[in-house]
Image (cartoon, rainbow, N blue to C red; front, side, top):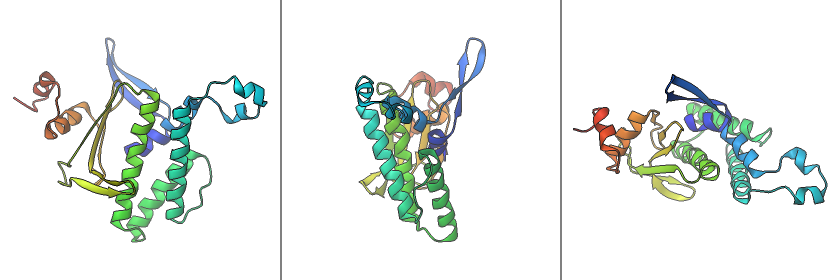
Length: 209
């Protein structure tokens, strides 16, 4: 699952430059969010007066605490004890849910609810790291046709397409788990959703006349 990969591992984006395609590596989003808070575990060992002078990003801290709470709650929901660092807990949660679903120990609705929650984590973090350039499109899936899925927070659109300047597009369906991962795919999805997009780019990829 692309969202889990971006949350927990270093991932690469191929960027076109004047010198040709260049690999740009990104740290895990969890690491970036923790760094954005401004106070690390080692910082917390300092005296209170020292801590008072360290700037804390309250939005990053709030998102981090919510992420940890949701991961831990879902781990308990699949009968796992939350242990290890946050990245390992996310990996354990994703793997456990997949294993349980394949073995019949997890119903499709619960699996889809979990996938929807996991898909929401990267864009929430990007809102902290780069709030001005995150773009999101919502709609029905062109593969399975599902429009809405149920989540713990209520119904939401099945398809989520996120695009951020300089980052790989993230387009995933919370209903059928279909994934699209190129700029051309993002443009096709945008066209499917009747979004306002670059007409010249559509023509370049042969998506529209």
